[in-house]
Structures are given as C-alpha cells and as structure tokens.
Picture (cartoon, rainbow, N blue to C red):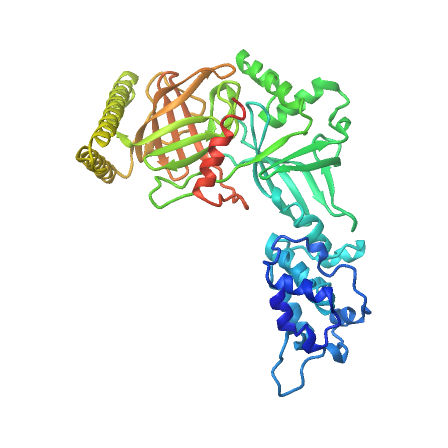
Length: 539
C-alpha cells in the first residue's frame, strides 16, 4: 500500500489532506507487509466523502474532473493518478482480487475506480472461471463485486475434492464453481459390474447469491427440490453441511418407497432382481446406515496423487469391482518401489481410507504360457515362491540394519563398510529390476485361471506386465484384517486388475476420466499426510 501511495503521489508534496495521526498510520503501514487475504468487500466500499460523479464518469466513459485528469500532453505521468481512468481499470483488473482492498485504502480516487464492475467481472472470470454474462446481475441489483466477495471468495476454501465421513462407506464429493453457483456434486461409480462406464453424479448442495446481503445455501438432497441448508467451515481442510428442512427428504410412500428409489439410483435395479441373499443384506444395510445422516455430513479434503516420470502409469482415481459390495472408488499412488491403492469409498469389510492393495514394483512376475496360466495351482506356486523371496529379503534387510547399527556404535568413524555394501547391493537390485522391466514384452496373452471369480467377464485378454502384491481382506466390521498375496496385472494406461489368491477372486479397475479442479496437492508431503490421516477415520 505504501508503494502505491508513493506512485500515486499521495503525501505532503502532493497536497494530501490526511495529516497528524493518519500520516503516522501511513508511515507504520510502509514498514509492514500488506495483508494478502483481506476482504474484497472493503474494496470500493463505503466511507467515501467525495461525490460519486467520478465513479459514474468512469463507467460511462466521461472525463474526470481536472484533479484526476490525465497529465498534460508532452509530459510523462509522474504518478498513477495521472493515468487515464480506463487504463487504471485495466491495471487494477489484472491484480488478484485479494490485493484490491489494500489498493482501495490508498486514496478515494482508487476506491472509486474499484467500484467499476469491469474489474470484478474479470477477476470472477480469471480466478474462478465464471464465463456467464454477469451483466444480467444488474436486474437483481447484485454487482460482480458482490459475486466475487460474498460468494466466490467467501467459499473458496471448500472448492476441490472431499471425502464425507459416512462410516465405512466414504464417498467422493467435488465442489466446483458452476456458472453463478457453487455446487457440491457427489460422484457415484457406474452400476455394477460395468466398470468402464462413466461416473454418475448428483448434487448435494448449492450456494448462490440471491440478494446483496449474503449468499444462500440450499440442500439438494431428496426429490422435492432445493430447500434451506447451512455450511460451516470447521477448520482448515474440513467443513460440514446441515439440512434445515429434512422433511423434504421424505417420500409419501414412506421408507419402502425411499428404499426402492435409492436402490434404482444406487444399483440400477430392484430388490427382486438381486437373487444373492448376502448381497441383499449388504444393500439394505448400506441404505439404513447412509440415510440416517440426512445430508448432515462432515467432509475432509483429499488430494489427487502427484506424478513423476518414473511412475508405471499415471496415478489417479479408479473404479473397481469388489464382489457383492459392487463398484468402489480407489486412489492409485506411487511411492518409490511401491504402489498403493487406497479406498475412497468402502464397505463394512474394508472401510474407506484403508489401503486395499499394495504392489511391489521391485518384484515383477513372469506368467506362464496361456495354457498353464489357466491352472490356478501353477499361478499360486509362482506367487508363493515370490512371497517367500520377499520374506527372506525383508529378514536380510533387518539383519543388515541391526549389524549396521551395532558397527556404528562400536566404530569411531560414522562410515561403515557393511553399510556401504548394503547400499551397493540395493543399487544392484534396483538395476536388475530396471533390466527386468526393459526386457518385458510390450504385451502378452492373459486369461484368468480356472476357478477365479470375476464380476466382469469382459476383461482385457492381453496385459503389459505383472507384479507381486498383497491385498487387504477382513471380516465384517473390519475384524481380523490381514494382507494376503496376489497378482497385480497392468493391462494398459487406464486399466489394471488384481487377483486375490486366497479369495480366488479378481478385481478389475478402470480410470475415472474426469478433470478435477482445485485437487492438486501443494506438495508431496501434504499428499502423504492426507493419505495417512484418512485411514483411521472409518476404522
């Protein structure tokens, strides 16, 4: 702000009317950093003692009074105040909206110019992607500055991806700016078992500006249209929603009609179409559990996984088949020589937030020929041999670590020959792994062994590469969880599978091809922290 004051010539040399305490306050401001997160409502706000004709002339393109006219011809302007108002509008419109309140405190002329709707229309478009014709807001008396300050800026912290706290089931919420609304869309997997179909989505809430006073929050849950709701930002990366008219969620036919409607939306079928008794119980259990929340939920932010050129494929969100539980959403991320699949949606056995699969990228598997691959015992033998190899390597690493710690305690120098040999061995192993992957064929025939159950028989019949991995299984209520060996099968850039040896089951995963905005992690550390924090939520 002090810099702006010097540029516009505000001060004793220019005949500034602010004296005494105001001058001392201005000097103090020059020694401090400007607030980068001030309220945009302050910019161009009240408190102006001069007549508003100047602002009207800026909007109408008429000349300003001589005190703020452009400098005489033939002389370069000495301050911003000598620039044409139209040019100042362009300059101010290119600044971040959060900086404009500080600019408005410089002088009354700047404050009047910042009332120009052109500035705020540009900020709405460039910062939040609002492309609608904002001029139609004039009918309702709402300005572009109102839209920016009271809607977009105020609720900017809830934009992005979120996971609702719905016990073991979780979910995926995407909050976006949609026209002149902020809408929370709940993303749902396609109907089981069509894993390659696009995602489905439905609105849970929306926020919009009906009048100049404040934004309106509406609950979209149910089938009776928008109704009164509330949003509270609990803390950083967490907010909650509440419906104030839950009677709008009820249907005239009672709980039975609500259940049948939910079943058609969630599963695309009726209960009579589902002949598996255990599956019927799981579906009914989920309806009873999730409907009790009545859209009064707490959400925690999730990030998309960061990527690097060394990744096997592009990380991201996938939808996968999980037997009687239907399709669920899984996040695939890479961590050095490991890849992890974390559940974004879950079930009573393995809740949302748990690591459903882990892939050991240091141990690729060479599948047998297509005829022997049909023999489950042959595939099981190959996987169990690798499992034993992984167990031995883990024991050797632990032994080397113990010996290294003992030698460091006994030696006077910090360097340990044993530690150097261990590091060299790891480099050799890494090099061997790279050689193995380089020699792997571009594609090879693939078929599921006899006896392995798959919800989707339309899986690819060729694959690129396979790796040893482990899958998490547990009893109902996440009881007795354990990791069991399996096979990670990479089909292409957008599909992979996992064979659960102990369950004799196969899960097929397909990439969610949606461009999510405001979902990138600020750093690798922030993503790892998020991944660690979402695991205990539903456990």
